[in-house]
Length: 444
Image (tube, rainbow, N blue to C red; front, side):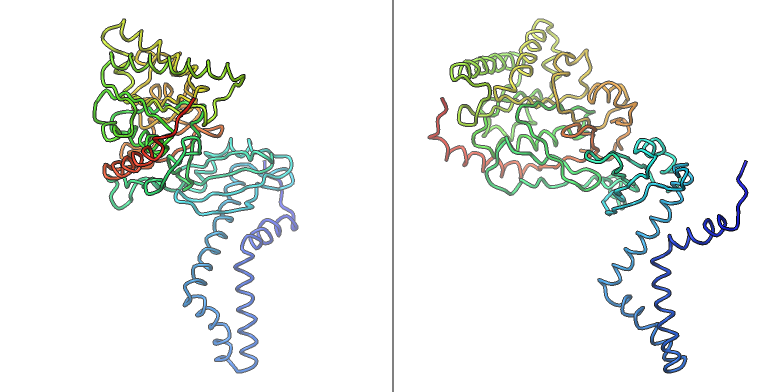
């Protein structure tokens, strides 16, 4: 049943509310009308035309003002559509209050809004109607996240397009250059830029005390993501790189800055055993010094990149596979505090390929394109696909695009930076030079 409209409610519904949503446009129109009337009274109809027309010509002729006017019109149009979407979604309170836009920023994927919910409502109410709001606004997706500091504020992303796919040539995925590609010395202890999300923000990760897992189907971009980590390690002269490469080509260009590089299972086991000996030596050093944290002056950081992890964990010789898996689990479990960082890349880290006791120890997950929801969950974690973070929904044309679960409570859709062969060679050359300059330094 509908409530019967009174005269006052009808005026509010059909006149006051729409007028308020058009207030900026009506104010401009009122100024032009006043100027036209004043000009007409002073100099006739020609004076009125000139008085009202010259501001329009100035705004249209000056690029800055034309852009500002178009942006103001776009923001006003968005607010009117937002008002309609909130009411169609049933998010108006009993006092006829709706979530209001308090900030707006245009991003590559669409719009990013700061929204304040009215009293009596919660951000969860808005998030629960995100699909209905997206259908009303006719956008691809609406994402709602509660502000960390204030419960009445929400960060809302209106996703209108996929910024990682070239609309002129959808089959071509344009690479994004790594910001550190042309820089100097870096440190693996600092936040490392690894990707750009679909809102245009740069994503960084802190690897100190953590491990990272790259997963996805072949040609999905795992090596590109791993390359950003290797690039940061190469530019850190205090970092040692002990790598495993089943294909013999993915880590080949990085060999000049690597301390060790192995290709087969026997070499992998020997490398892992030596890493465990180094790890035990470092813990003995900490015990003798009465400390719990290893400082940069005590020992170098060790990056342990493994390309095609399944080759070593699912070896045809079960005894060899069990031996390596036991060593790998020990390294990932205890190596973080000793300054040993594992960067593992594999196609599908399911339980029959990678032991769950190894996979679950990795804090940072980066899932690229997968074929099924189950494959996505094996990378991102159980239940993530059902919660909306499904790597199988990533466009197959968007190479290097994935879901990164790093700093923050929820994964972020992003595209990894890319290093071509020439850039890798340049980084490696600078890494070798930096290591020669530090050749005289010694750790305890």
